[in-house]
Length: 114
Length: 198
Image (cartoon, rainbow over all chains, first blue to last red):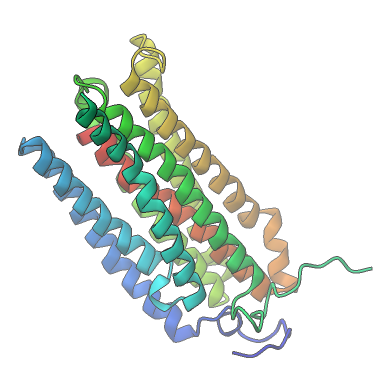
């Protein structure tokens, strides 16, 4: 990638994405769009199956995590992003998971005391 | 004396990123922790309550499904807006960015009808714990939608003047705005099942 400040050069090349990469992202976006719609259908469909609570929660979160991963990977370009950003997100996830587990641990402790 | 922010166009040698890109990702990481804290609050309130109501008791699933489709569609048009400007097609950029903004309006309109129905039935955040966390999570998310729409509207309108003088800088701004918009979509992807379906 050029370090030039020349405004007349192709924007795609300056922004870190070649024209081919841009086309690739657009094609992928259509596939991801279709997948997200289908997965949304699965989420709503699973609700009407009236599954046992724990299974329903696990399934809904699994589908949501899949949808979220598709958005992050393709819409947010994480599949082709710099390692610095990926490491930053790993650090965020490392802090995020204990944050979610804290209330569960609190409740587990409460049950033990009772 | 020039006060321009450096590395808005070319990547900074040590990070390999423009300052704007690194900045928006740091901001998004803080947003993940913000919503993460509220999701943790939701879990704590839910597991600590023996009679947690099903979302459908209070909430409208078809309207929420419609809003999910609207936000997913707006993420695609946001990608198309970025791709258009990266390939120097300013007219298409304006078209797709305009549709993205309209999708934001559509989402908020549906949310307005949802909130109105709750208030009409005298269901408020103070009514019970479920509604308190519902209004908190969806209200904060709604504020993010408004924020994203404000930035996108600026880039669609007055901010687009930058394209004539520095197209690469403008393209980077569109990409960064898009990253925020996709996060708003991503948060809703989790809010929808957690609040409405479980």
